[in-house]
Length: 265
Image (tube, rainbow, N blue to C red; front, side, top):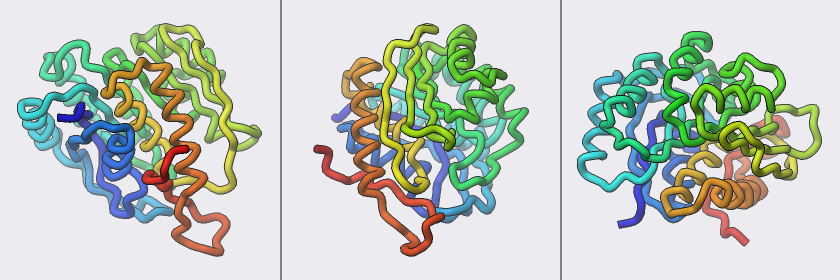
C-alpha cells in the first residue's frame, strides 16, 4: 500500500485544521493518513470555543492498533492538548512501541491559529521538552519556538532546540506580521541548511500550519530527504493559500481555509 503517516491530532468540525488538514495534506503528498484522535474541539473556522481531550489510554489504544495493522513510515503530531497525551506519545517512543528511527514531524501546538487556548502553556511546554528529543523535525510558529526555547531570537532558539536533542527545526516567520515576505529557515543539527522566502499573502489562514507539517510528513514517507520535503511543501502550501476558500465573503478580517486540493503547477 501507499506509505503510511500516523497522525496524532484533534478533530476540527470546520475541517480547516486538525485531522482533516492532516488527511488532506498527506493524501496530496502521495501517502496514506492514519489517525489517532486526541481531542474533540468545538470550533469554527474563526474561533476555538472549547475542547474535550481524549484520554491518554484511548489515544494510545488507537495508535497501537494502527501500528499493529499498517506499515507506518512516519509519525506526525499536532494538537495533543494535555500533559497526559504528550507524556503518552513520549512513552510510545521511549518504549519503542513506535519503532526506533521512525521519522517524527512534531507541530507543537500551544494555541490555535483562531486564537483558542488549547491548554496551560507553561505545563504543556515542560511536557513537550521531554518529547523533543524524539522529533526528526519540529515546525513551531514564532510564539511556540520562543516558548519552547526560552529565547526571543529565532535563530538562537532553533539552535537551542537542536542542542536539546531535536534533529531539525523549521523556523517560520508567518506570525511576525511586522515583516514583509515570510522568511523560513531550516536548521539541521544546529546549522541553517536551507533559507527560503515565501510571499506573504493578504489575510489569515485557518489550518496552514497543520497543512504544512503534514505535507512534509507525507513527503518524508514517500522517500524525500528533509530539505527536498520542505521545498516541496513550501511550493504546495503557497498554492493552497493562494486558492484558499473564503467562508465569510465581505469580511476582510475573517480567516480563510486553505484549498488543499488545488492542482500544483
